Length: 182
Image (cartoon, rainbow, N blue to C red; front, side):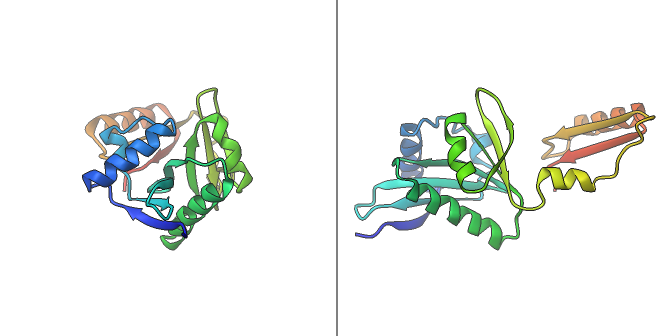
């Protein structure tokens, strides 16, 4: 029988449990509400007996919960290709994935570039513009003056975030601000 690609609806309890069991078997254990609530969609590849072979999710421009139960790269490639197609259909580029170091090579083989790596994880990107290309386009602060930068997860933007921005602005001549506020 042919393998089938399908959407997984995590609001359906049985689907979510099946998905979580598959991910736990693959070594993924963080199912906190803050991680799950940002997921836009989840897909999976099933065999003819409806056994899950691979799964992945999208949260904005981030691929999450990417896992396969096979060493065969075909399922991984098919899954990531479908996720990339869905991002492309939404006009989203670049996009990112954070994974364990032992899985980073799989993403590099299909064109992802490493942004940062530690013993615990690797952040990779693919698409245009890359972070390097984006930074080249940013106006440069005057090196003779005080320059600052803030990277924050501010969704929602709170009074605490506002206070941080105001403090940085009062202490700097130029402040770069990167945030996910929409």
